[in-house]
Image (cartoon, one colour):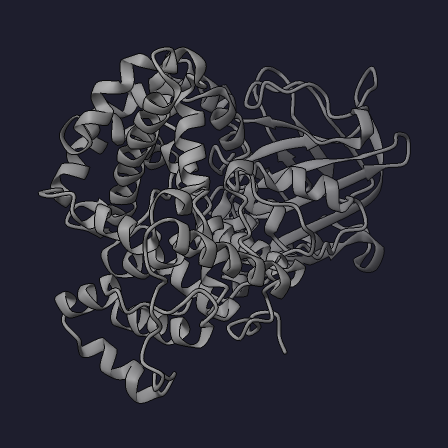
Length: 549
């Protein structure tokens, strides 16, 4: 069985953990005053006829189906699988783009630890979820959606890995009545955190009035989305039923219902603890919400919680959109917690997931990944291919030009016998453009120089175009000498000029070169030496394979 087709029949589940969860759900149903969830009719199946019929059902009928009390029991995977496939088919889910991912178990940085709930998944299921997160990262380089972890873990109970990937991918970037299906970017996540601050005053009034009794309550209330996924699995699976049809607003309803129940829980504690109740209780709103979520089955049944969600009257998508936009975007990003800012600073998550087969003998995989961080993502995601190597093609600049052809962009790698390390340049423009620019510089500001010579642990140091830094600092327009990128002449190849020097230059025999300070990249010589002249030991030219799109 292929890794992308596994799951859907329970092989991703830790059966002993699932049995324990079922037992806890049964005990909670008996002590919480509610009846256990009833299964769907026994004839529910996965037939193609039922799946195609689901697409024709109206939105109202699907909503009623998802909200129905006749939901599958926790252990009835086949019935819930039939329900989910029906709901997903009706939503128009399409297969996610197929892409390979690098081997490994490291999670992308957006997979925050507070959202890593696996809900009875066994190691194979957790590995499948990890692959899904990596593939989604490759599909969306700016992805920041921690809730995909718990949602994906729940979907893997009943769906295959491929179905789960397709379902989650179809949620990204979609909106319904101006409201996103999921908070899938850092800005949307920041908006999601603050939603309840602007909604509890209308839809959880008693809870809202109690907030001043909690110290630092705003900080804890902003973690409501984290606490939501701590609910028992028998509460979360029905939540996913409705979420697949109604989208993010259902999760907001669950958050408001959780706030209402936490207020009732606190009142019970107060009445049972006497007059000094508030002083004797944990005064953290976060602890109150978290404990309520984790122990939900003690207070209510699944049906009671579901009714509490949908009895919140007059909550419209427009209300959620208004609450999401209550704080200006610039303020939201400026006030991001340090932890979130650090997690999102790893904007090269996708490089971690990218399967990398290096055709270079001059760079290690670690160095190549570091270098690709500075290459525009639209190119870096493509497979690398060797176009030229002095080891096989000899030392001749014209041969290098012929091998480069019209390929762009390019990675030029150089090694000198006098020092340890590799240096070179990223060329954003095809070298064939030299024909339109004889004896002149061409290219754009995406070009950069790099070196590993003299760097600790062989790390890559990159010199980007000085114009980028000037734009960031809002300085005046750069001088002509600060925009000299590539000059490809019959007798020499030069990258970077201005200020009286060339950043990197190679002669026509590829036998010698030199590197000096240059104004275009504000760069130091790429290798040490009084005149920075060097003998060439090896040269490679790598291209980005367009077939990798």
